[in-house]
Each structure stands twice: as structure tokens, then as C-alpha cells.
Length: 258
Image (cartoon, rainbow, N blue to C red; front, side, top):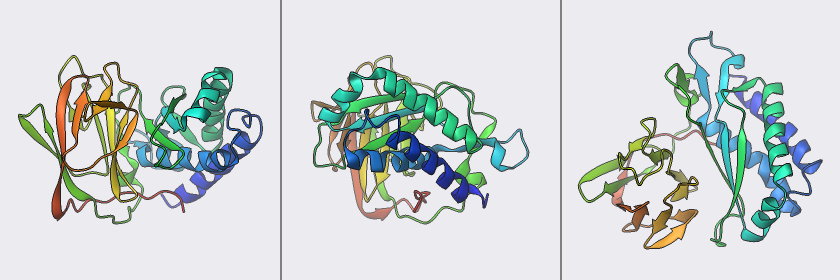
């Protein structure tokens, strides 16, 4: 789909106008306002799908509808006091996407969470689909984009001490629901519990607002930069993260908008 870069650039421009205008009070920090639109579009791009029931065109792009924005604690506290503006961001995101000919299967929602790991970048966005039937869709990377090659290190997760899940993709959703990449059939694990991402040369784990929480080495986290040997707990279910030195998974990752 050769029109994709143009579609996403138009979307980012519309979102930037929204953030700089009526939503400026939600993001008083200048650098956050400058970065938010780009991060939203990049997160959306990584999860875009095509409705295979329709002819291939720019009008059957389907976007994830749940967006979690991680901000420094002080900025997140502002958002917690302005839920009206958070809801307006979700409505604005829907309007901007529709104007750019991108569809949602459900009305988008936006959630803002604090990220106390100050050494990481100031803003991070995770996009995912809510509980919908995606059997008639295909990932955009497979159907519409020629992804650029990125070497993803060979990594693995030892689940509950009994099975090994090999990480072969740059994005891995983890949870109890069957549509996750790593399915853990345990009532302590939320339906969509956590997400593992390989970004900027490192693996990062995000909690997706789970009920039982996500812990790394017995410390609860919202997001965390992983190192080999880290002990993860998803609501009490133990996992161990590991890397295989010198090996790559030979996968590809669609890069964000330049």
C-alpha cells in the first residue's frame, strides 16, 4: 500500500494540531506536546491491520483501539485530574483517524499511567486491540508494507518453570486470552496482561493495566527495561527472561515514520 506513509503523515499532522490546541492543558510540557502525536502514530502503525473481507485499498485499514500512554509521574498526575481532556483526546484520535481513512472496530480509549523509570524516554505509547474478532483481518506488515530488516536478538521466556517460549517477533502480547502471542492459561493472569517490545535495541516489558500486576525481581512496574536473568511475575505466575548471546531471531520490524 504505497499510500501508507502519506496517510500516516496526514494523521500525525492532525493529531499534532489537536495536541497543540485544545489539549495543550493536558500536556503542559512542550517536549511532550511535540512528541505525543508521533508516538501515537508509531504505536498505531505497529499494530495496523487490513480487513481481508474488503478489496485491498486505503479504506480498509483497521487501527488498534486501546492506547496506553506512559508519562513521568508529575505529568501523569495532571492527566488524572483532567479525565475530561483524556476523553477528548480519545475522541480527537477517532476523528483524526477517520479523516485519514483509518477505521476502528470499537471507539478508541486512552489511558495515561505514570512511569517512574526516569532514565527512560519521557513518553511511551502502547497500542492494542480490545476484545474483538480479528479472524478476518491480516497484519499490515504481511499484507501492505515491505518491512525493513532489523535484527531482533534471540530471546526467550521460561514460563512457570516448565515451558520455554522463544521470542521471534519485535512485539509479543502476553495474557490469558487466546489472541495473545504468549497465552498463559491461569486465572491469575489478565486477559491482556503485558506486552514485550524490542525497541531501540532493547527489550522492554509493559504492564497493560492488569488486575494482578506485573513485577520484575519482586518490584511492581508499569514498564521496565529487561536484562537477561530478570524474574518476572504476572499476577503470581513466574517467568524468567533470557537472551541467547550472539544469536538473532532473523525477524523484521516495521519501523516508525521517519
